Image 1: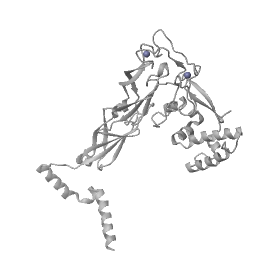
Image 2 (image 1 turned 180 degrees about the vertical axis):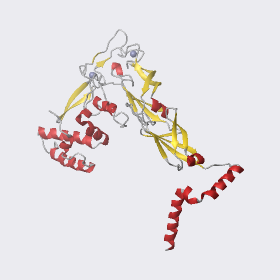
Image 3 (image 1 turned 60 degrees about the horizontal axis):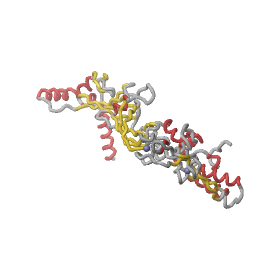
Image 4 (image 1 turned 180 degrees about the horizontal axis):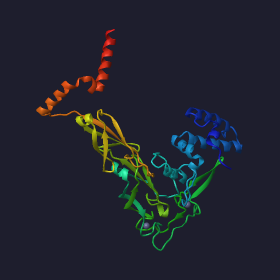
Length: 377
Ligand SMILES: [Zn+2]
Ligand SMILES: [Zn+2]
């Protein structure tokens, strides 16, 4: 039977507010509650369905995943992961992370099979240039790896783990509780399905050892601050041959002394001398790839004016495209003048008159005059 849409289950429209969701949930929960419908299997099914739907939609992160991927967000899609937990924490949800590359969703993680190794987090700081170019690098991480003496089985050489007598190898035991069959992890084997008679002396039967490992990591061009990269199976080794966890690389991009990034664009403030700004000319500006670009500054350029250099911005993740570079001109007032320079500027002042050479002052003082005139009225 295909699953019903969670919004239909709750009887609300997509985009319903949290309060609406809660109200509708409460109403329906009262209606289908097992205490009010003793022995009614259909009501019990609806009550479970309702709880499942509300569980997802009341949680912002789960809701976002559901809105985007539907039920597929919570299915156990991961191949080769024995005994995936089901519901949240199932393999399918973690796989979404790869599609949401770069988006951050905290909290959720893959449950995986019994004894699966933990996921690891590794924080890494890179420069803006690295984020632009991409980078191949090596990292060393303290982790646990499969024990070499027993090849991760946990059993001493010459012996083998045997099937768990409590759960007959299933790793789970069932118990009846009211309406529900509760499935629990087998207490005898911890869910592994096997027990060890003679534990390995090196790892005391855990099948793994503390170790530092070196990993080669490829950081693609265009990553952003907060991007996380998943390295499947590079987390901690699992217990006794169970699947390893994943390694999540959390990237922070260092602020750059010259460039500010804004998405795919790069901003840069470049000082220009008063004379160059007045007369116009070409200036050289640095670019993120470490080269220089020529920029024509027209005569009469004002401080704060922006120029766009198309295609000189950041690289874009998984795309050949590049953003633009915005150069903001900061016109510099000359300092430490020689006597001759001072004379020339004095001469310039006598020659210029204020109105035509200083267009902004002109507009500004007009407004000041209006303000003072208004105050007088
Ligand atoms: Zn067992
Ligand atoms: Zn061992």
